[in-house]
Length: 359
Image 1 (cartoon, rainbow, N blue to C red):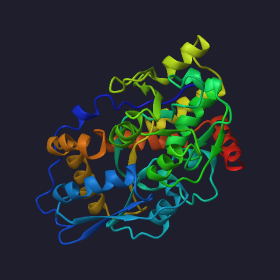
Image 2 (cartoon, one colour):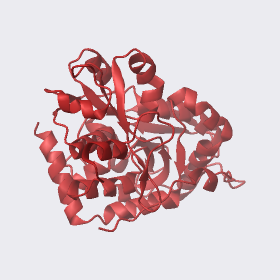
Image 3 (cartoon, rainbow, N blue to C red):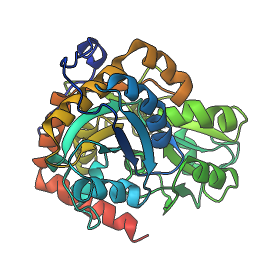
Image 4 (cartoon, rainbow, N blue to C red):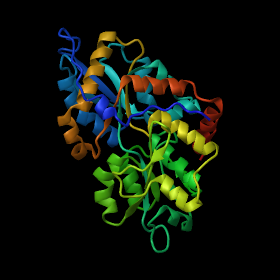
């Protein structure tokens, strides 16, 4: 199966030069731009609030930038609002994870297609990871292999279309780990509380949440252990470990458990998903038919903010990771790939999401 792949390996270099705004770029002068975030407190909200003040400096016209939380249905409530209710004036845009599984699965609550929105920018963080309570098995859980000694495992999830759940659960399924899916957690604090109380036992998280929140408060105290992180896909479609993690990658774990590379329909579906999402990250979209001048200035603002050395220098401390800028041409190619998905892959995702929603 052939999959179109697009590189972000050199995105930092490709986007290093700032884009100069036209001398008369005053569209947003004296205006307010709202970033609609589909979650409450947590990683996405933290990222949006960190960037909002920097965007005020970099969007031509220097508008005020505020965050409005609109949680519900794993960002579908917020993105439906952007697609159908927000005015196409560029003053209300979505800042949310790229929930590709929802579109692949044909979710009834998703009343838009990503390719019908206006792509503004992408922000790519580090790969996701899977963590577990240390005390799940006799002698403690130290590696993913120890999960096979545990019974009654409960995965703390948000929604089966949420990127962290998609990546974590499909890799657990490839490994052959058995678990029950407990969904409905809205943010990092609620999942953290559940795992601390041993109501649930393991979950998937972003690199930012791991380094900023979970490692110092739980892993360093011996409550949880990082089992593996997701491998990074390069332009040729090859996966490799991320050097920023000191825990093994999924493929390293898989080869140790099964003695070979993964294959089959689940693996093909996962590779397609990764080629479109790069494993996760934020995507910024404006409503259909948004004013062209507004689109131009928003794209300038996000690119310049995301590649500003001063902003990037503060990111690690502020949000736990340094985000890479995904240019417009790369993002739009991803949308075309998503729109031309193989029907067999789409059916796989539809059946998979439906099976978890029944649990």
